[in-house]
Image (cartoon, rainbow, N blue to C red):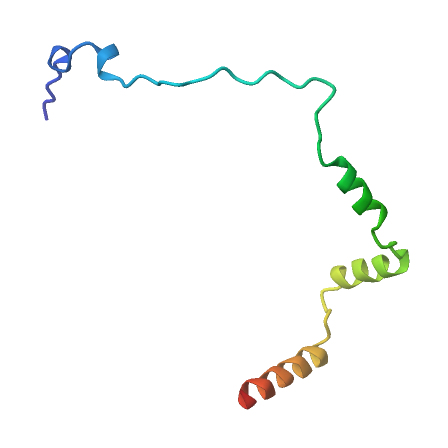
Length: 89
């Protein structure tokens, strides 16, 4: 297999490439003082958040770590309820 390549056929490479117009310089870094406009709304939302109950978090973590959760009986009950609702639809 022979490949012929003649760079003169295309012309100079600089003219074959499109030029980028309208490019602006990168924005200046903000430094240590970032302009955050919505920090007041964020702070008020954080202040209004419901308190976290440690015992509920611990129970949820234990449930997630348990490979047998949810129990098979619970899954069968949920499946039966879903099947019943599908049949009624």
